[in-house]
Amino acid sequence: MDANTLVREWGIITQLLPPDWREQARTTGAFRRGRQIRDPGTLLLLILLHVGAGLSLRQASARAQRIGLATMSDVALLKRLRSSGQWLHALAAGLFASSPFCCPAHAPPGRRIRIVDATNVSEPGSTGTDWRIHYVLQTPSLECDFFEVTDATGGETYTRVPVQPGDIILGDRGYCHREGVAHVVEAQGDVVVRFNAGAFPLLKQDGSRFDPLPALRTLQGHEPREWPVTFAASGRQYPARLCAVRKSEAAAERAKRHIRRIAAKKQKQVRPETLEMAEYIVVLTTLPDDTETAAVLELYRTRWQIELAFKRIKSLFGAGHVPKYDAVSAKAWLHGKLLAVLLIERLSERARLFSPWGFELTAP
Image (tube, rainbow, N blue to C red):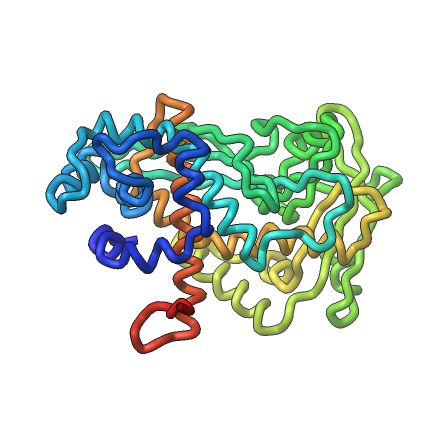
């Protein structure tokens, strides 16, 4: 999100927000009086200059003064960001509720669906400091109910996530570790996680080793199938299910090209088994048998679709200045990032139905 474009096309961007976005600024306490900032729109523009366009707080406040938006210090802008967390979350949730990725159609009734992910933050300048943000989003509310900022050594794991009974936590293959999955199960939750064969040895129900590839080769066409398995962690054995479906030929070839490209950059050889595994989508779950195989795969698809909807978040996070020592401002910053991502996605959707004048006409 370019700062100049953000300011120039602000009127078009605000058309994408929920209809009551200005009133929400007042009801959530983000905007109380217009002494330094004259209206909620100006406040949101200032926040997005920082969290969306990647300007530092000082740069954003200087830009605001230069173009006549507001006269305020970077410290004052940080205070405004701190008080706007609830508003930014409400705006992001409103945008997300109208997206096609909102509600998992195959979610077991009465269960809370949560999506865990992590992304890196590279601070600009000479410090070279790298951070990692671990966060959990609920769907369909898009509420960020947990986040943690660590340095670059903080790994992706379910063990850092607080779990409530009944939670279903969706994760990519970076979270497919036995101790992490066991952590969720012990807290009476369940996981739906992309299977990582190299990091997660499986056992048959009789305790012998389970090799996934011979099982996957028995898949017929594109019909999903599952196998009952167990895994060992902390001296205990846990039951699980391995659910899989064969990819289309085109999708499999794309995955193999990606694997070869990454291996070439690292100057490593690709094992034939790795390329063969790329022909399948394989998901490990601890959900009980009353959730069908196809429903498990659809739940994982929900995580993947949201990942696609947030694909631009990586570059947005990389350009940002995360408040590292203040939980309130860090959470507001995170919600602002999510709002910026959703606005970009909505602009991209509008661009597919291109109009010569560049925006959507509203009826009189």
